[in-house]
Length: 289
Image 1 (cartoon, rainbow, N blue to C red):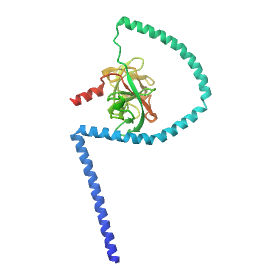
Image 2: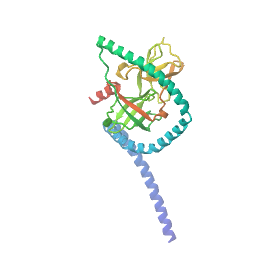
Image 3: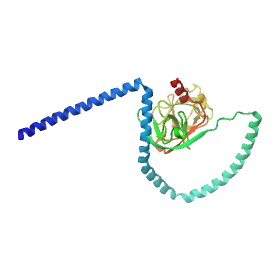
Image 4: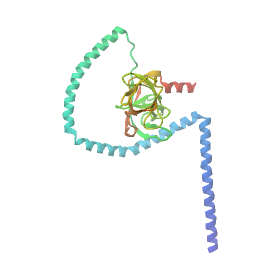
């Protein structure tokens, strides 16, 4: 009886080792198969990725709610201590804003009058939706986030993504109920910008790090730390004037930019359709042809 038990244990151990080896080889085979499918049929992979994103986003949304609730409670508790001082400051600011409002209304009336004289063609009206960030896929090889708004909400590929502080990025993929946003720090991001009061033009390029860099800057261009960086509106990629960041470091021909928007603090974003053709939309149209 003891010999039979020992033999059974030996056979079970051998069978277990064979199953482990087979599972490992199966994983390798599946990996190579997925790589081949991705190379052979990019449209199929793109559709599968969007479908997976739509399926995962509701789960991420549920999982993120408790953490968001705790974070909001802590933030509210900290703000209670400064409410009285803030109220006093807000009263003063409100009086100043009322004065500026009167000036702005006067300037707006003058502006309308001058535009009517010039027969100026108005720019397209921007349409936007706000969404919550439920996933951060940032890593060594990609810098993107997932948001809870998609094609059913009017979001499209190429829409500009911002916060109250400045530019976040652009919609790379729009599913039915979710979208993937390419951040300005991603290595595939290219943004025409204007730097400083001298309106020096350059291209903001991400490198998957915390600070994107400026390329194609003129040899005689004077750029110093602290200069503000905004979108230029060139190539219909982004509308002009959106805040991007400030020059953080200039050394050995390398110009690094500190973005106004920190990826780690993103909770809600605004997805805006400015009615521009844009680089991403143009690229998508060529691909469909």
